[in-house]
Image (cartoon, rainbow, N blue to C red):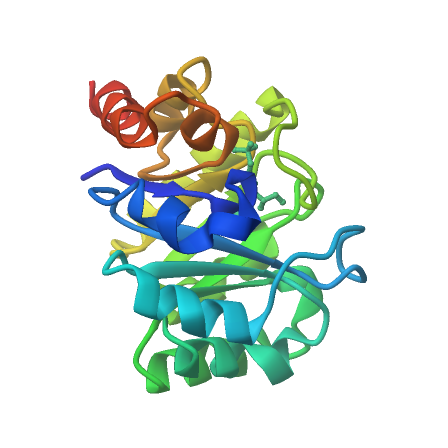
Length: 217
Ligand code: DX5
Ligand code: ZN
């Protein structure tokens, strides 16, 4: 299981996005949090910013859509330049169709679960996905405390992935730091989003390397 780190630009300076994106070159992905002030009580950025970020960095974009009506919007984020698009299970009317559309447009399809959403009802849908995102905070804001109570869900999800022999990445997002990343890795996560832990550090690129080493240990 190889470890991937996806720094979240939510914790970056939005007035210097290009520079901030380049500050984490060497990371596997750049995590881009799209919020619509309906699915979550916060508003961030949308398609034009993703298009510009695509031109600003060679790091592939991992777009996390915290928006309603994912069915309508997800494919457009592939066109805007995302290499991976994550929609929320709670915001998609037809998750299988959304995942297929994302893949058909050439990106990795990923589905996210809020803390209170169980994985089990989605077991049969896993082959349609390239990644599953287990939120380890309530989505909406960076800098929140990691929810330890999500660890059993990470373990159960890893067991389901292995049971079906799937090549599906398991991402965690929220409160991932040097304090919590080992617990997540031990539970079976292999793709780690980190906002505050990377952009709050003096040297963001070094923070990415340190997190990767810790998760791989
Ligand atoms: C919050 C976002 C996260 C956020 C994580 O809803 O999905 O990606 O940036 O920030 P930290 O790592 O600070 O918890
Ligand atoms: Zn996110």
